[in-house]
Amino acid sequence: MKIWALLNCGALFFKSKNMTDENKEELRPTKMRGVVFPKAKYGVIAAIIIIVVVNLIYYKDALLSLIN
Image (tube, rainbow, N blue to C red; front, side):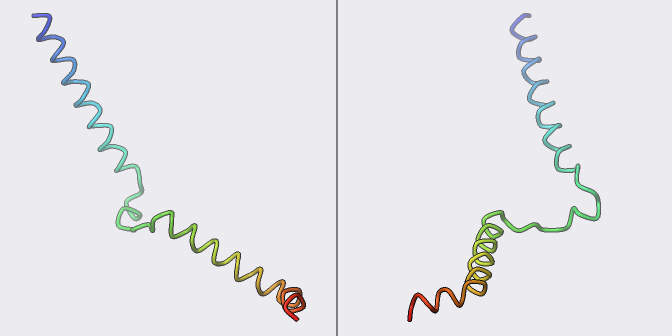
């Protein structure tokens, strides 16, 4: 009887864990559920490119004076 009770408690634990996983997905507002967000690595790459381009524009004169 004790083994059955332990197995039953284990099943309840796994079932409640799965139920909380399902609830996490539904935390987004209904209008945002269909929105697909890009992966974070693309944001990092875009940020690095923007920083490099802005610095090249900002320090263009200093870089050209180093070359000449």
